[in-house]
Length: 274
Length: 295
Image (tube, rainbow over all chains, first blue to last red; front, top):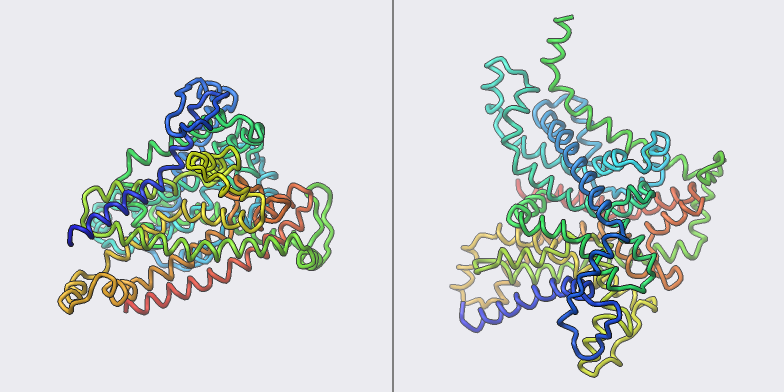
């Protein structure tokens, strides 16, 4: 490639990175400004570095509790999701009986239906089993949402693996059930990574359903806690609103940057299958 | 007893889909069927439900707010999809191939897509507020503040702002799908093109785009399906306002449910379901034809 073309391309890439990142800068900028700041006077780049916003927002928004709830709900859902969808994917890929075929067809048909369609009648189910305002209830809802796509990923990956990896263990007297957990489960690690990454993000960010099922302050997840906090100020205290949002964004951005390589691989794998 | 247990443990592998299916039945299939039943009643969430036939659906098509929500939802989806694909494709073309630091650049561009659309909406609220927002101050520094409008206060500009924010947030996601598609194009084709004297743009037009058609179709359909259930971003940026003018169907469902029109809200959900079914059926057909192409 010629030098001019290369320069144009690099400038373009820097520009689009800039576009992607500038709203984050704006958020941090607002979160670091002192309350009475009049930033009309030319300076819109360097904030006041007023860190008190964070301590005040931490206390008044109860965001710490919300982060804890989000961690528990996301972690619990992913754990349950991996156990259920990997074992279902295994039996669907390996043993083609009537039941397994039916399950797979039903899941594939429902894969594209978004959760919001079901949320109102689901609310009545949740109420009758006492699942409203419980983390375990929300875990079950989030796991269900993610089941079809995860089962699909696991089963198509396991179909591509040779049966021989289990058969040697079967000869040694192992059951097919044990062979999966002892052997196959280690082979499907790339799928597990993709499942965790793709669904982790959407469970972590779930708002449309959490707003129905988590209505008590102690149970709020990050999106709910922030939306309540924002409505409370109705646009008055931007420094505190921005500080709370920064606190709410930090965990997911940190995890993303730390595992950036795996993230991009997992997303690509999911995109190829989808 | 021992025999029974051992035969069970030997056959356990046949039942490994049972737990997943049980969960899915209780939290998805049963509510889906129950929703169809509830949509034929006047249930308010508390007192007993009366069967009223198709009245909820008739009321839906008579309600101007509801029809406007259908229009918004479809407009948002059909407006977002082409823009997302153009932007995502341009990004992918720029970041394809060997280049130092492309991994980091891809991650940066993808970053907005991992943030909750609700929080993203709030960030853009800070940017776009008239008189106080960040964009206003940028313009003011350049003495261009008269260009700033109160975009969230008018229906048309508010709809376009929602679309632009959505495109900005998810361009990275579309980019990834295109990057995967670009990787599957054999490099020799480009070499042949070069030898034949084709420049960058004619190679793009005659080689890259035709071979990307499967990715393009999949991207457009999945973008439309995703955008049809839009909720968070509208809640954060306009709350459906001014009035109810930018409300989407999923927000309408929630508000009707809280407004003790539970039966009616399940009917609205079914309408949304049928709207989403159109691109879903399309996507299944595309995927099937893709399988055929492979064979």
